[in-house]
Length: 198
Ligand SMILES: N[C@@H](CCC(=O)N[C@@H](CS)C(=O)NCC(=O)O)C(=O)O
Ligand SMILES: [Zn+2]
Ligand SMILES: [Zn+2]
Figure 1 (tube, rainbow, N blue to C red):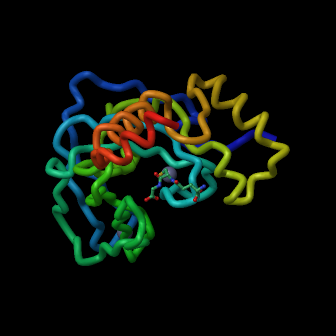
Figure 2 (cartoon, rainbow, N blue to C red; figure 1 turned 30 degrees about the vertical axis):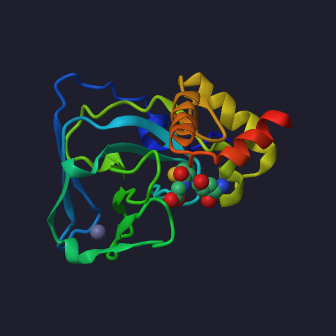
């Protein structure tokens, strides 16, 4: 049986346009749609298999990218937005009418602080950055995918040029680890001495 990864993956990945300079994300409501402006191209676009990211009906994966939060503006009908899980790192603002997640700022002290997660497929226009890898692929099992299907899922992702990872890409994981080292609380003299004699 054919695997439905995501419509923007299954039918051929649309290429990035060098001239794409942002646009407006629109939710699925026919009445009073939420509109969110993103200035500039998005970054780190990828497929995500986690259960928390918004996916269109029938898709196994989401498509999600980041934009600087100061480049994200809710233009219209923001009163329909509500944070899905206020305790999560990513504050996912979903439309209460149709369920589409419209923007997800990271406000906590974290390597991604100042970035907002967005779903570029909701752009009115085309040319947004093509997805470059697949993250949290094993998590699709949590959403009901048969573990025996995972070979096929990863095989299909590789076939379309998206390397499957079970967390983020090595580049992003290295970035997070580097930030963690740089933001470690300084060790006390006693701790340092203990570490040296251990
Ligand atoms: N296995 C978990 C993974 C969830 C997860 O860690 N998602 C990643 C990728 S979006 C994340 O960074 N989550 C932070 C958050 O949800 O705030 C699930 O599928 O629910
Ligand atoms: Zn909506
Ligand atoms: Zn996710």
